[in-house]
Structures are given as C-alpha cells and as structure tokens.
Image (cartoon, rainbow, N blue to C red; front, side, top):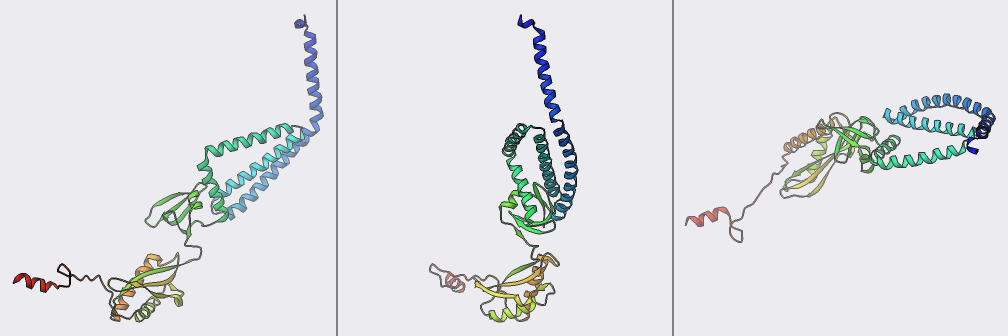
Length: 299
C-alpha cells in the first residue's frame, strides 16, 4: 500500500532537505555579506546617533525632544539596514510584507492615540520652529507666565500668581501665542483723566517730563500722551512709554511708579484729576434744585 511505502516518503523528505541545503549553501556568501554589513552598519548608526544627539541637544531647549528625534532617526537607519540585509539573502517578499505591516500598525496607533500623537507632533514642530524657550514670558490661551519646562506632550508655565499651568502642546501650536521676551521691550499704557478746566497739551508736557525722569524708561523720545476721549467728568488721556522686559522693575513695578509720578506731577501743576461728579435734578421734568424743592415743601 502507498501508505506503508516509507521509502517513498523518506525520499521526498530527503529531496526537500537537500533542496533547502543547496539553497542555503548558495546563499552563504550573501549571508556572510549581510552579517558583516549589519555589524558595520550598527557601528555607523551608533556614531551617527551620538553626533545627532549632541547637535540636537544644542539646537533644542528640550532634551526630551532631541532624544526622541535621535531615537526616531536611529530606528529608521536600523530598519533600512535590516531591509538591505534581507534583500541580500533573497527575502524581498519579506521586506514588502514588513513594510505593509508597519504601515498598518502605524495607522492603527495613530487613530488610537490621536490626541497624544497630535501633542507629540506639535511639540516636535515647536522644538524646530522655537516660538519660545525656557525662561521666556508668554501669553496663550488665557495663560500668562514664564516657561519653566518644554516636554514632548506639554509645556509647563509658571503664572505670575505662583501657579504651574500644564498646557498641551497642540493648544500652543493652534492658538495665537504672544512671546514678550523675543524683542526684550514692552510698552506700558496708563490711562489718566484731567478736568475740562485744564489744558490737555499742558498736561501732556507735564506727564511726559515726569515719566522720562524714571530710570527704567527707554526710548524716551517715544514717550507720549494721547487724548483718548471725552469722559463723564473730564478728558481721558492715555500715557505710553517703553521699558525693558523682562527686567527690573517689571511691568507692575513700572506702572506703579508711573502712576505715582503722574499724580504728583499733576498736583504740583495744579491740574485736577477729576472724580465722578453727579448733578441731581428734582421735579417731574427736572430743572429744580434741591433747595427750591425743600422750600416748597416747608410752605
């Protein structure tokens, strides 16, 4: 019976093994080349990785971003080396399968961790563009403070009230961001009012002279006072001057000193800073003074 013909099946097995052995012997030179290539390629990737890491750490403020980019590039180089070795030993089909599988896995991970991936990509892009660095004063998405740390997924900002705000990088990437440290200067605006009986031009000269006496005021030729509007009790003025920022005495300190000097200088020139004045009319149609109303009631 054919089922009991052991010699036949054994011959088939032998033929298959011999075929595999012959194929393996034929690929020994390619296998040796692939092993040697992967050894030297590993040393090459290690050297390139160290050079990239040093350069990226100098280029980025975040060590985590630099190390992540270095790791990604090293992994990509290693995968290229593996695919080349597989091609040496005649496994082109395996290379194609691995690439297709990697694409599917990457797509699945991207959908599963969409929010995390978006923050990660935003962190990398901001690390390249550098809209701010550690120590800068920024304002974004209702957060105003000093950047303390830039991570891959979020940025830590210390507000001026002493709190740490953790902001996802995608928010900083999507929204308008103001960096107060890039130019190193900042304009301070102080609103002030004078009475209608005083001359706005004279008040302007007095205020500008008082503001420019402050040591922290820079660009003194640009210190200015503008008449903004007619108020209920007086003429509203807007005072502008420039300071170094960040720096001493700081925005709040500079504005406090400016308000103090403005008040003293206007008082010295007998210029009135008005307070709200309310005129009361009595009677159904108005026009009657309080004294007249009281006199009528006592009759």
